[in-house]
Length: 378
Image (cartoon, rainbow, N blue to C red; front, side, top):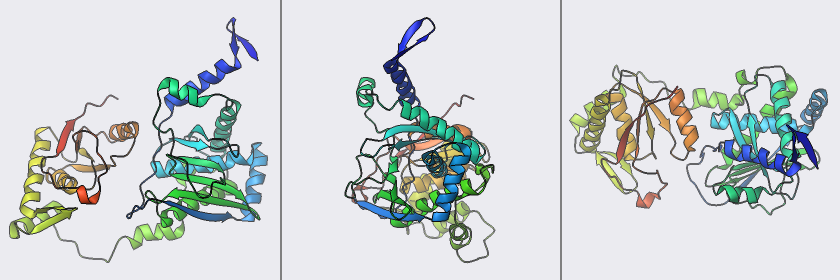
């Protein structure tokens, strides 16, 4: 099968190759937050029934928009990924057909209304499916793409005995069982049961909002339940206390002067006294000021939560800067966008790649953080 374009014949295979070249070269990796304090290897499962009245409302909405129900579900999934990652452009695996491997699917949450989001998602879904019969693995090998393209998957509930495909962190499956059921399978070294339940709730909320008012601006609507919102605003606040008329780093300095040799922080097998921690923070603060840090200038810290991280945060406060936390496992392009949006020109990070180390092997090593001075291109 072929078509005539610009005086030459373009075959279906060539069009599909061009399409997938664009997808593979442009897709940014969407990483989920690491939401467990006790990572344990394994696979967990959570199921949430989609109420029958909501399913009926979603089907009516799909008919109204002249799109399949799958486009509505995929739009809700894109909204959840955007909320979890903080990105407008997200990537996920899309298992459109049971028994076939998921395809890399790039989606945007840029459209303001739910209606526009569903229609844009339907366009992306239709284009993806029209090019699905292509040897994608061969193209990946040709481009030498060895890293995973996505770590979440949306599609039919897989009958895989509870296993997850390699490099998949979360699979959101749809199961027909006396109605429609949302089934989440997730790696327990990344998510715990409570967080998986919250993510399932975000999906249900997104679908309910689409059904309720497709012309509403989705960017102005929250996926948090009333209970979670109350917990974040009030439950995490702790008891009300009268705050001292001093900043955090000033309170720390008072304690350091009073008890310089007392243990201030412990991490893994290492520990620092108040004298050591304060000295390291002062050293970093002077380095920041020497690099031209202005008052309330943004300084990013890209490292694991360890003793050096604590010294870095104190140093930023001592130097009068604003602290920007960045997880080291985030994709490089996402880190770059975060730095650019924040107008950040100074970064404290480890020399070389930050690696996840076991608690037993972590040591307190002074002077490990490296100060980078960035030049932003706007």
